[in-house]
Length: 311
Figure: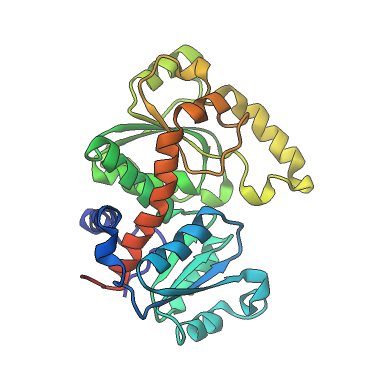
């Protein structure tokens, strides 16, 4: 039985299999309308969500299955041992998608679950987003041999990009003035470095040097500077203001990007005026929406693969 918590035990072939299946389902949806007929999914949300909730729920419907969605605070996962609760859930459904705050909890679910568990996002990894990103890159460029510059916080999204793009044959450049402490993972860093396709951009880079670097890229990627659960949290105000001050010089705006041919990707939610300007969003809205739509298709590919369902 295979889980999708991160890509630690995934070969290049396995990652490509999911993406290729996702593209196949997207391009011929009527062929797969019953592929998960009789299958049931349990969705558990501790973190807020728009894309994960909608894309997994609609995806399961599109493939002929059923789902039940529950908030963490409304479940006994909030008050009991995860190992017991997840084994009960496994008696009722065929697959679990959990969007949790802490990686240790999703790891515990996978350890004790009798059915496949998909990580819908945690503080260390976002594998479903990375699958959608790789799918979008393949659709746009015909393959993965591209140069992508990530500018932002070193977070779960970057970790999952580090696990995928370099091993698939692309070059990943990371400019990350701040690192989310819970996102630190030496295994991911070492694996990415060993590919020879992961490059850390010196933080002392000048604006002109950064502009030249952007001009050499195929994709420039950014993400929120503040985790969604803290964005309006008054107790997080000091840290939020600190991050904005450090990160503001690295905002994706027309001054930085007006001479590059690179497309801009953003995994959403977008905070215009912070990590990216509204002008840049609107200029790249087609690929950002393609990227976000592909969450559903990529996850469909993952569910079909994990449940070993074929037409």
